Length: 322
Image 1 (cartoon, one colour):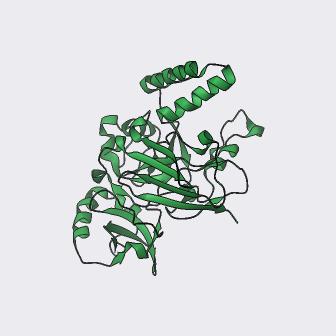
Image 2: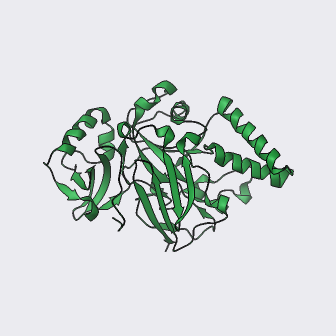
Image 3: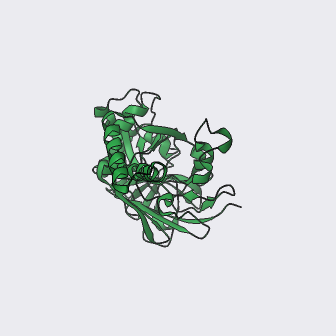
């Protein structure tokens, strides 16, 4: 655990994965204590696979003094769950995309700032009405804990942050109707979906387009956690505050209500292609304020601090990969 205050979360309990003297274990977080669940389940992923049965039992365990309890401050906090699929939604915040489109219209097409922004807003309104989300896959190997060091790879210079609300699937489904989508959500966590901007496009393969593998899947490029907070405790996931500080400067500060495609539409869309299973992780996109917007990118010695309402916080120091 870092030296800053314990990461508060919404509700009476949350779940996570921790490392103590005996090694990693799944844990139930209640206040400043963690109940070791390894006597009951091998992992948080296994627990989520039987979510409806486990949820009421977790409430009882959180209120009981029985079991092996630890001080949270004495444990290392790992990524809360080992996911199945990681589905990542891109270009999903209205203000963020409007900024990008308007900047292109000014620099490439010579539009005035007012014309460029009006055109971009019109495009986003039409996308909300008739468009579909843009989703790609990420690698679980990129995940690290919420307080781990972020390691900058040798290739590339423009290493960027993208703080995102992520949901964890708790009920399987295919072709899920939007009105039923929240029934499939076990809980929520925080992901910082780091990207090396100057490795995103392949100059040798321009016709293919983006190279998501290289740009987004370096080791430690997906700090996740600290906890999985059950959906029942989070309130309205379409109105949570996302805040990221880079070296103490606020860079991202936005509500999830700025999402172009909300969580039900995202779940409905991805489940038309792939069957969702408990433990799958769905990232919902990042708001305006990434490093490319500010013209500032990550360097060794930097500090990233991030939080989302009710889900706790992350704190990641940045250094070069060895």
